[in-house]
Image (cartoon, rainbow, N blue to C red):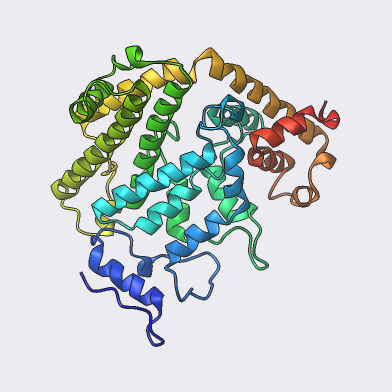
Amino acid sequence: MLPFKPMTASIALKIQLEDHEKHTLAHYAVMSSKSAGRQFPEPEDPTRTVFQRDRDRIIHSKAFRRLSGKTQVFLANYGDHFRDRLSHTLEVAQVARDLARNLRLNEDLCEAIALAHDLGHPPFAHYGQDTLNEIMQKFGFHFEHNEQSKRVVEKLEKQFPNFEGLNLTYEVRQGLAKHQTLYDQENKLVTGKTLEAQVVDLADEIAYHNHDLDDGIRSKLFGLRELRRLAIWKESEKFVFKKYGKKIDALVLCSRAVSHIISMMITNVIETSSKNIIRLRIRTLDDVLKQEKNLVCFSPDFQKKVAQLRQFLWDGMYQSPRVLKYMRRGQRIIKKLFWNFYKKPQLLPEHFREKIGPAAPLEIIVKDYVAGCTDQFATQLYSDHEMS
């Protein structure tokens, strides 16, 4: 590894960063210097790579700030310590960087995709997405938050005078379009993904499985008795007892067990993905893009444990009466808002109304507006006398 030189007047930091990538990343990683670029040409930044610049634009976007007001699973009135869509996003980014570092992939690209992957998520979690999808199908369209995230960064954010969107690199935008987990685009064959995009897919799954497990414990939807039916929990709990002893406090036990499950998942992905890369003789980025199946994945045996955990969370958390009560109210709110704005477009903010036209019919604009709402703002609009 070459020493990292301090910035001098004759050598821009960006050049040093790109040179550092060439000497530390795998040959099949995405190099910043070889990015396909942006839709609208811009002068290069002297101190940041293209993906670092993308990351910063995403963090400073309005859509990113709104994530703190969007539900992950539990609404804010449950308590202060439950995840929202923003904290979920940050956890995905952390796991993605960890995986990328160990697989010698581009951490900055992984982080940018991770930070943007839920920008298009509507209020009220996946129930909100399902509701908007149901509505849009009446117009011959559909709604999927990955596509909406891409639309946010390409069209809806307005921060520059000469183009719409954030003008992110091709690689980040493709990572958003091809993002796929067990809950997103599950039944589609999505190919041609960089390893960095695949890393974000698994990081998303690792993050939501574990923080939903933690939130479910905290909310007392299930306890140790139920958790000990899970193979992955029993394995993790055994590790915790061996390390700390069996007299550990129950809450601390749960915290340490969830933490170890995250470590188990990350380790399995690194080991399995590394074996896949060797087995398939992956040498270049082109070799990666030609593959029909993801190389970044869990091993088959470990995937069975993850599937058991997923089913457990579905039955005990996502379908619990306490969660469904608020989510169904959220669905009613979204339906009411959409049809009121569709029937009375004059109620839309002016900068949304002026976008209505042949390229963006009314139903698309209303969808954009409702999808961008936070839970609280949507509820406030619903309660407003003009929406009654």
